[in-house]
Structure formats: C-alpha cells, structure tokens
Length: 263
Image (tube, rainbow, N blue to C red; front, side, top):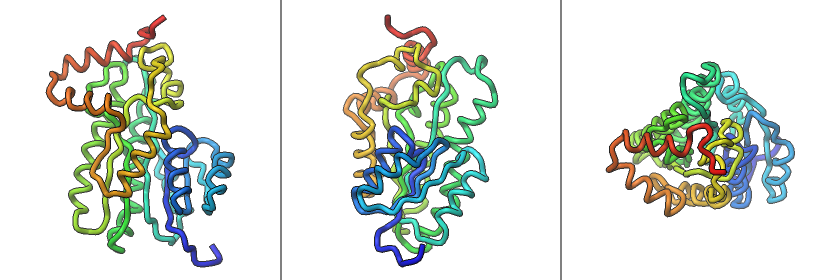
C-alpha cells in the first residue's frame, strides 16, 4: 500500500456468503478496511464492501490448510490488524461411519486447525501493541452432542471452549476475544453439508444471517465474552446445560437424521 492507511483493518474469513459476508459488511460500514478470505470466489462481494469506502484485499484460499492461512497472512503483510473475525467453517451431515474421512478431516481442519493457526499468527501482534479485537464464530451446536452431525458439533464444542480460554489468557493485555454462537441460520451451510433432507435443514424459521452478524459485531466492539444470537437459542443453551447428554443426542437425531425433513 502506497500511503499510510487512515482506517483500521479488519480480517474476515469465510466472507463469501452467509454470516461471514455480513460480518465483513458490518466492518466496512463502520469504517474498517478489509482483508477478506474464503475458499470460494470473493470478487463480486468485495465490490459490496468497497461501496462503503473500504479498501478491500481479496484472498481465495483453503483455510483448512497451513499454506492457505500463510497466503492470508502474506496478504495482510505488516499492516496492524485491529479486528480479526475468524468465521471460516462448514458442516457435514449424515452418520459418522457413512462420511468420507477426507471430508471429516476437512471439517476439522477448517473449523479447528486453520482457525487456531490463524489466531496464532495474528494475535501476537495485537498483544504486542496492547490492542485488538477478536471474534471467533462458534455455535450453540457446541452445547449438544450432534447425532448425524457429530464432527461439526464436536469442532464447535472445541471452539466455544477455546475462545473462552483464550479470552482469559489475554485478559489485561488490551486484546478482547468474543465468541459468536449462532443457532441454525439461513445460509448455504445446510446445502454444503448435504443436509437438505433433514428437519433442521428444511426449517423455514432459521435466523437471518445479517442479524446474527450484527449481534456478533456489536459484541466484539463492546468487548463482550460471548453472544448467543436469538432468544430461542439462548433458551436452548440454558436447557442444554442441565439436560443429560443422551437426551440431547436423541433430540439432535430428530433434527439432523437423514430423511427427517417434514413433508
């Protein structure tokens, strides 16, 4: 970049659609420049962010891989990151033993390994400067054993827990960590996870991704520890904490088992 940027910089992963797109849009409208990354094309959506005055750098990379995260960090360069919104992630439906293990690994590497590697690359600079905001997209799925979505829910249980631990480690450093925990949201998630024949995949009452993203962005800017988007989801989290795991697993089965979609 030829001149010294006057706007703060936000890095948003998984920004091609859904919650990630709207998180990036929130950043653009609130005065951030952007480095946006996803494993799908971003050029069209980047124009949506530029309308709001943001300088936008696009990175098309597989963030499940270490080289993909390295490509993103190379695009960031030496410019300080003011906000890191680690949102990249995807799911996988059907029973664990019916899933291709390469697909299983990709979910784990995207949701967990790639996320942690990116944080490990970017967060030290925030800590050394004594300022920065981190938003990690977890899920209320992390509170429930995910029958027929077991790998995804397991990764989100890890992320929900990790975000809380990292926040504690970074207390008093000037760096805040916020965990956004949405419930079922109206995005491409269920199509990509091959869950369009399930009750949860065909539910017409999924959350609006724009509202979920706004709740997460506001919580990040306020330095909150976590935010569960939506009253119904808040109640589900409360109930999950006092309900036996096998009861929760059976409830999840009713939502996510292949063929459970209501006719």
